Image (cartoon, rainbow, N blue to C red):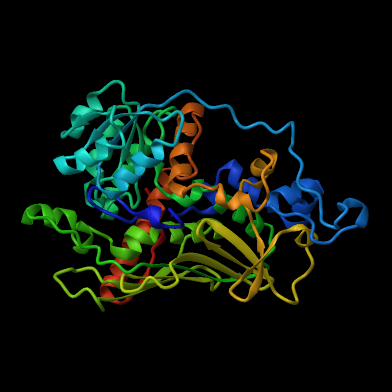
Length: 463
């Protein structure tokens, strides 16, 4: 992926890219919500350096090499990765662009063999078989669900088809990873959430809110929750990519099916299919649900029979006056994909699965900045926030290599899904977070379609 491209989706589809109130946070999330003093107090200087992925840029002469440079990081002989769990066999339903990307990422996991693939379109099945040559092929999803060798199912069909498939998979006792948004309507999303809520404890349901499993976003969250940014004032995210979203087929019926993202009865458009992940990320970071959304949409370049605009903006309002702006266009690729969080002491930029903190001139000294790697970004000096740096350093690699070692958020989300299945733990991106993110996306899509403001009633988020 390179940021959010992995958010492309479904059965001949492309994009997809959450939400959680404080009462829904699990223990691991609440532990991240520490204050600045505790953050500095709980770790050694070496641990902080590893977490930041940096090396001292100032320091005493005795700690330097003959040429005056800091010594390279030492390999930690006590570092141990979490043991690999037993294999979990997968079935993938929906073999469009997102389904094939899912197969590609599953192939990178050492314990996620694909036992079955399913699609009603033979051409999609044939292309997917190149990535999963040992998988059984099915045109009927019910036959795949009858396969006892399939333990977990990933559903990557168009959004409006999710409900029937998900309910059937849960009823069949399968672990389910469902792409987001969960559904095309609030009623369908609530039906899915209710079904997922009722499954046995050891059966796992995970919504495809990729950023909630991404080490880079978790790493940034730690700094965000320490208060290092000061008073949060605003957030923004964007997805700009020049493409029509239209796909061609000699068969008129098939062409309509391939282009489900262009019609209101089958899609939530840019703000719903793409924006759901970055919008969820802000709500996750803020521990809050938005209270209103104002949408704007226009078709400015791709003049055809599409019903969904090729350019959108949505303003999400949170209690206390913080607003998040999501902007996306299919008319230009300038700026690509990124997220920003603005604060009175510092701001954070997440781009291409890398992140930086930019401090204000009058912000207080936190202590660890002098040990962090600095990069020149947008005529500013950004403090590199490198995820998985401890692991990278333990392997004897240079800190600068840590960012390039990160995989796509989709791979991390699928890997976390396997981990939850083996451990029997509840996903951070469970049915509750998935439902809240989907309701937000649905209402944002409505606001964009009507170019209006919608107050988000608390009752809409109740299952």
